[in-house]
Image (cartoon, rainbow, N blue to C red; front, side, top):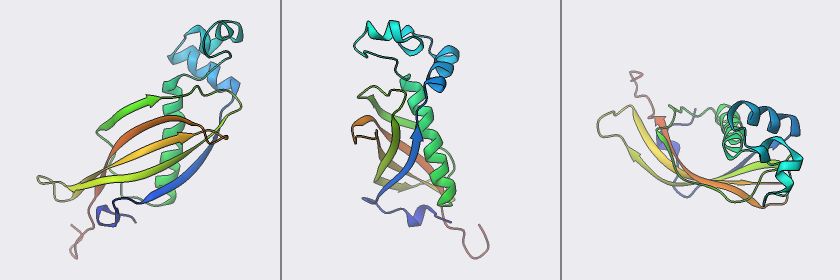
Length: 152
């Protein structure tokens, strides 16, 4: 299990592989972001996107799927997140793209009021199959501290 004490400032990690499908882009947009350029090739062709593109919020969801798979595989003692900062959608994500993640730990801090946890900030960079950066954000993660001998 990876705990707060195991987090190293400056450490980097690459993970994930998410294939973006047309069907998923449209299904997400129909339910959560029904702007025409997320629903129709014809409407998208009339915009700067040029063709059907995924919602930025859908891209966030795809990234979250990769993050959770990575946390589970690495057995991190995560406690969720109070939020993200500096979210930027830099390039469109299109059906047929394959996304992946790179992250770097920026800093960490032990909680003053809750000794059983700490927090860390990491910069997330999301790239497509051509290594084009499509999205960035700074994530704030909460994580358990290593239990003492008594299990606290």
